[in-house]
Image 1: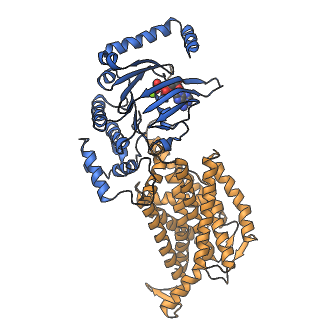
Image 2: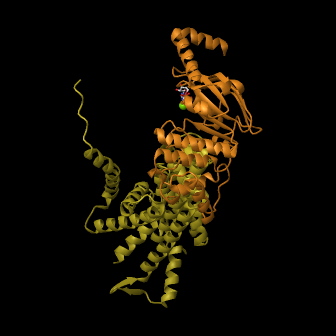
Image 3: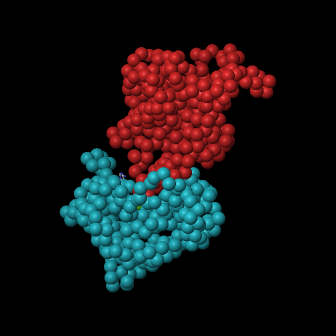
Length: 270
Length: 312
Ligand SMILES: Nc1ncnc2c1ncn2[C@@H]1O[C@H](COP(=O)(O)OP(=O)(O)O)[C@@H](O)[C@H]1O
Ligand SMILES: [Mg+2]
């Protein structure tokens, strides 16, 4: 379904600010798989999602999705296949436009846009119906500007927008990290429901070990731009939050032991 | 009275300029200087075609098309060649100065004996009134010519404003508004931000050129200097319009830009009547826009106390 083959990405190459953000990531997931990505800060999780979404083109490596080689596709071309929710609740919606207008744009994700009316009575009715399923009372406010909503409400709507047309791949980048615990819970529950209902192939980044263990079919742990652990099958089924934390500790201890040696080891393994 | 009607007519014609500037500055947040060149470009293309006896409607549409191409060019310089937005506009505007001179063949092209949209409106009015030259309105005697221009401009601007509003309600127009609001989001929904920006700047400059085209027909000549400072002029109208309607909804803002343009023209006409030196007009306009741009920030800063520097 999604096939990443030896992805390399270096930011600002050849400058003092050079960052080797992805150092040969390979990942393959079957249709309908829900994969959780965890990892320390700066380990390249967001960069990996951005590489798949096409925010930038990768330096080397190959990306295939739904049977097509999308390595050189631009971001807006990939949007036909990919739905996305960002970490920042402000990123996923147009704030001065109404809820209905935002969703009407999502209803055409990846499709040509012409001179038909963006909103007709039928679409507006459908928008109300789907928003009602969020249980946030927003169905009566579809003409309000999105900018007036809370972060949790925005993320819920962004999730609805990303999945309005069933995407081949859903990308979620810590989409609850900026929310208060209650909203985060609500959005996570919603995420789970939508993914289950539509059997969506999903890559979700989270910093919460609890979420990682409760959700998803597989856990990928990244470190320094590489996949460090990939827990599947029986190993995945056994894993508890403490085990994941222990693996983080392990990484941290190794780093502290001798950063220079760690770097050297990394390099010789890449 | 005739002064006020004349000022309103020019205000209405330049409302198209204001709509163009609203599109680039407010929808895209793109400071597009192309405007100064494309206004003249529209006037020049229309004027030379009228001199060659092309039908006024065709000549006017060609003026719009000229501005459309100029705006698209600015958009392409910015998106495809990654040239700074301001500089892209300056490049096209500067190039247009020479192009306009070539189009017109000289720096000023009179349209005194040509058939234009203005003369067409006048003829129509004369025919409707059965030959009378003056019309009484509220006890004032108003020249039929002046009145027909005003009504003609009103009809045209109303139609263009309506079309623009309708466009913003379509799928493409909605995507265009969202592009200015949140490019990251609209890209993630599969829209090429580059394409939309190019199209938007093309439309914007098409409107501006249409204003130039109508202005040339109204005043009876095209002049290579007529676009200078027009971008600030349009911005002033947009800002006045925003103050008048006081909302973010684009339907109101479109109406506001039109009203702002007319109001601004009326104020200018009155100020000139009171003895304002016409040479100071652009200076005053620039100062006005400056004040309108910084005033909201200034007020905010005055309201929130400045934190005292920490002695430690
Ligand atoms: N656009 C960029 N330009 C330069 N450096 C970047 C860019 N995006 C990410 N990085 C760097 O790449 C590394 C990985 O970042 P990121 O993928 O955001 O980490 P995380 O796992 O926390 O999401 C970091 O060192 C970050 O500073
Ligand atoms: Mg991140």
